[in-house]
Length: 251
Image 1 (cartoon, rainbow, N blue to C red):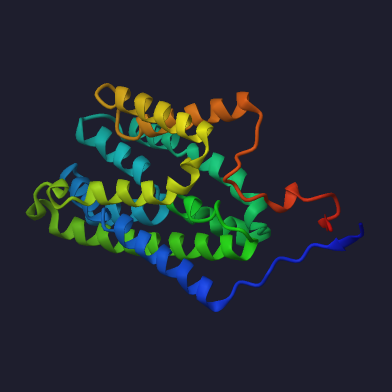
Image 2: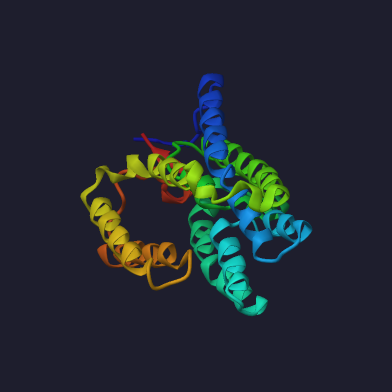
């Protein structure tokens, strides 16, 4: 056997187009729910400018909803901000996983952090190459970012005229899109158990906790299972760090 430098296969035009198309589709399904945030935020007492600034700068749906939820219930804005910060900690876990996979450095890594969300992570982790992971991350993250902010503006302007946004089925669309992204990872028995336990924990907390907390609790379930099983996910594509030292593959 000889050691040869590992070179990833180039991403062809058809595969690139398919990834971008899927990313935009996820962006449409997820970004549209920004209408709900815009309407709810204005109803909670925030101005249109404040509402749009939250989507532009914070850009993590659960944290944004948690903040306006606290304000709407009469709580202090600082309490709402701290709650939103707690819910946003899951993005740190995403960053730890994607940093070696995307292999960006410097300002590129800092810029990518702005669109590090559930959907862009899910569209990256199953890719076979760094280039494909980057295309999935950028196409999804940028699509969600653009459409979420446009929908936020539309919802804020329309305000209460929209009524309850859930009547349009947008909340179900978001969950359905994310489930479709994660479905390929449920072929492994451990992942199936993790998913069931996560659902049970999340549903049990829905009646007693603020919005977003059940999602964070379900993520902790996955973290605990991953920590104590000490086995690789067979549905996961190895990152460059998993290759033999020196970035070489044996053949």
